[in-house]
Image (cartoon, rainbow, N blue to C red; front, side, top):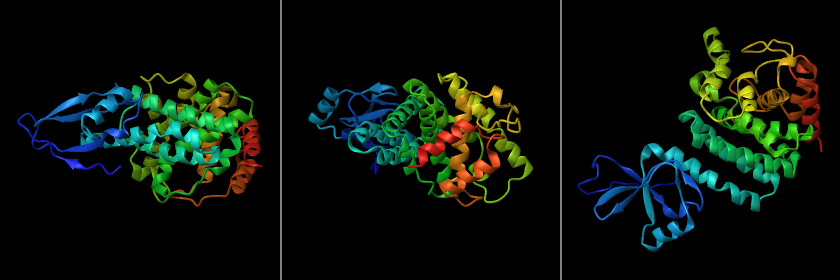
Length: 326
């Protein structure tokens, strides 16, 4: 991003407040910024656009034509500006990259978005961004569901937390599509559930999430609280009931041994059963602080012999295998 630090001057500017330059040519036609942008006018700094401002090409051209190459953001809005820039690249990816390469880029954008989730609240803007990500995942996988084979579990232990949710969304979408779910809105709900499924972990310290070794009893109880914490965080959002079910029940198991409610198969939505498999499969194929990653074959073999029918439903498992075996 490389934003330059700038200190505005003038009698109405807060002299101890520093701003970061944001190039006007990074603003995208028909996009919405969810952070304030300021402009220098003479010796003053004024608010140019507030949160929720929609940009049009004519206005952007006007700014550039009048010599405004930069506007300014507050340092605390750096994360919002970073995710805005990354999300703005999504439409171009669909035009230029084949599905497997596009999904890799979406992973990177999704990791940035997950960091953004961990730093803030669930707002209308957050859900809008997640919805845009979900739509791009669905469109990518509809074009070629086997592009999920390009997903890599290679990442630092710390990055696993941020990459995991976007990969769960991709795996769950592909599984659902393979099982015959073709309606784009239904697939989008599943993808959104994947994106938000671990949002409750934002209430848990990263040192617990990424602990290198077994969790203490108190830490494990804290970790097990994240589905309920997640449901609480999205309670006031406009997210669909399917997404909410995935958030609160993705750790339930078919035989009732899961948490937080000990539900059995008959009480779990098919979408939840799909997301549960996606969650388990990505966890098994990723390097984590307390385990080495498994190959896809090793992970599928582990699920088949240790988890199938007790924890994991058969039909989603078969669909995942069909997606991965070319």
